[in-house]
Image (cartoon, rainbow, N blue to C red; front, side, top):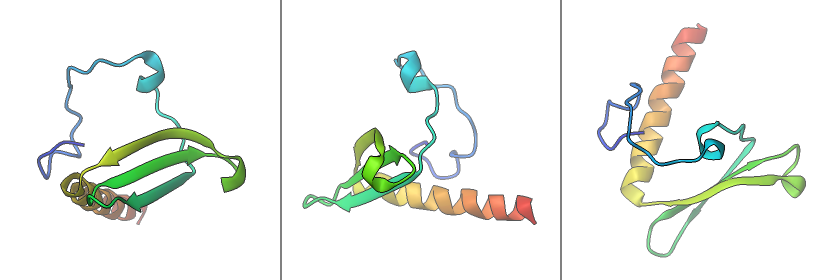
Length: 86
């Protein structure tokens, strides 16, 4: 996801330092969101058949403006998925 609205759908190469474990996408079955006192969002992604035996994939903090951008991007992606499925 990019900082600029409308760029999210295009794959833009970025100079990013990452190991192979970080590059391969992980399948996520559960996403938890929590609002911190400072208005940042804690995004926790888990994989598992049930919440009591899930494996933590990643836990990150997203500032409120990036969280709004994420919501907008997800709405556009879901709308596009609905159009393709129709």
